[in-house]
Image (cartoon, rainbow, N blue to C red; front, side, top):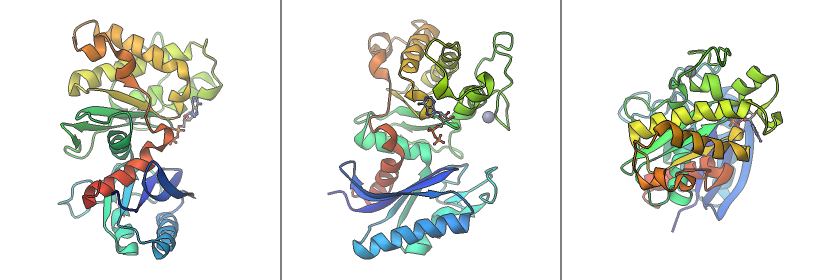
Length: 299
Ligand code: ADP
Ligand code: ZN
């Protein structure tokens, strides 16, 4: 039995909070605008306090924007660290929730949470090594290797990997405030909007934007394939809602790898190798739930 828990998907613009036990039982989903930490965390805690008074919750799972400290032996474990988001740098997120509710808390990045959700209930069931990449306001990636979430030194920052940028073909300098033309700088939703003067969702299938977008994302995926040897790559986020983009990426990834990685997944089954999230837009919130269930040993 999966226990009833609380889940927070914490983003830079909104927090999604819900209680539940799994995909068939996710209730009371609520959105809280991300304002100051005391106000936002206070509202989230008040929400769970009310739910907990009605039906006891076993714990709270948090998938958070970052950068964040995931090292449980660190004195700042569960903190947001050096984020550029005003007011949120060095905030004890997990601690505030734990103290506010007196419940066990599991804390990880938003994309590691989404990867956990996909592993438990979605497109990565049964796989030990895979990547979840979101292409939205930012680009971020979470990974499992050998059945464990990858944290490493801090946590991966896949959105900020470098990809070849042919400035003759694409003079756009990129929108990343830190790197300019990293992957996020070139291929996030805001990058598309700035380069082409309209939102990604307004660009028609015939627009040159999509071949360029597929090029950058396929370059990134080729890097991920070569570094981690994932058994599958899941692509989520708003930009991926354009159905034709996935096919362009698969095709271009095959070309870039050029027959060198001779796995059946890539040579014969690219359609099952680069896939949309099995949980749709709910990977993050369900993943936060899975994180705390794992922590409690009730998954
Ligand atoms: P966030 O990353 O903020 O959590 P999203 O994953 O929805 O949210 O990403 C928002 C970005 O995705 C915006 O830049 C927006 O232009 C783009 N986007 C949203 N919906 C679509 C769509 N249907 N097609 C293409 N781009 C979209
Ligand atoms: Zn960057």
